[in-house]
Image (cartoon, rainbow, N blue to C red; front, side, top):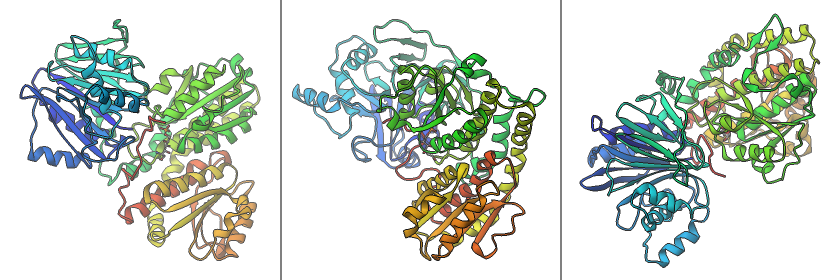
Length: 611
Ligand code: AGP
């Protein structure tokens, strides 16, 4: 949830400048405090504060730092309030060791008591400071030897970078549970939580595995395991470019990513639609026809927006492949000792590919005998590397904390998987497959038409900007869209909102309805449309203010609703790809009008790498 970066070079570049630029790129991972340390003046010099990276930049303008190697951090607080004192880097007693860390040291309290017992003085309330004192207390000629010795005592997760005043130019990195990669340059080396921090300097990255210890110097890098055995790791090439992590003229990444969806849906489909044979080509899935035949049931594990796409995926897969699908909150599933069986396929859905609960749920399913596949956006992420097969979204980097383009690409990917399994199990006749693939192929054009509704949505936002609550209602595949619409509004505008199955409203939430309550109905023309209209009448009868997302050409909602937005018709199972977009835009514009920090909503972070 924090962003970690480290750099060492041959002096051609200033480490402080590189570290600061990297922190700007990593800020979506956590943004309540930030800090930097460089080797300078024969020791280690640090600057840190509570606040955003631009605040640290201002501090550095007043108190400049320069050096050839250093480490830096942007924080999402877990242990210790987001104050300047608790900001990283953390130092040992003599300020000769500096540490930045992403993760949680679960036995920090025990270690702290032991270290305080033998004379160490702590300055902060963080778990991370324990590491600095532990390294200080550990034997070894080199900082990497002391790091290895210290980590023997640590229980928890970490992606960390360490530097010692005694070995200028050397950065030591270690990974256990939190993402960390190396950047390989020409005479310079980087360590970072993800590639966005270093892509402007190199595209060559090495993903570290759990248990890896890396040593970077201007002369090169080495990777060891805890027994100091050399580890060889492949050098991968980052496929996306710097432009994709720039705003490109938009006001916010969320806005940019909403408007990228015609292209991102197209890129998710690229090379995967084989019309003649009516098949979906999913080469990375690693599922043979026999494997597909042998699947008795599917379990989807995910969190947040990815869980919502899983709910849509359930309906699509059950309909196209007739396999029962359970959709589980990963955080609950992992502690339930899953009863997965050999013939259960577990699908882990995650944009970042690093969400700790989803990763652990996937590992729990595998331990229970299930085959696991990942539906992931970030190439080379842990879930992608640990699953038996998978499907990449190819939606490009998603920087806005509120997930948007990943959601629509996840649904399209699950639809491709539904066709794939339906075909492999011989359940979906050629014509039906070809028809569905055609509908998929039309989606990018239809998405572009929905995006043209933005001016209407902005006007709606102006009307509901002062709402204190909101209710989102839908049926069938659009019930999860109601959940997603409510989540978007909650997470970026801080308005309390709930999503519900429209029929469920009568069993309680209808008590909330009054003249103040905006009620957003998902009402595309599908098999449950008339039922949704009856639910609208129940809300109308109690004075609720109805906004309806319905299908182009639908003229019969008349006075029943206050506002309606019409999206193009498509296959009913695919309608969520279109109906969700006005809800993304509505949340976006309400948040902008309320002056909220849309890309960095309070208390949130883009990739939840701790439990
Ligand atoms: C969605 O807008 C949120 N950022 C959050 O709910 C997110 O979907 C969740 O943390 C799962 O992330 P993942 O897809 O990267 O695993």
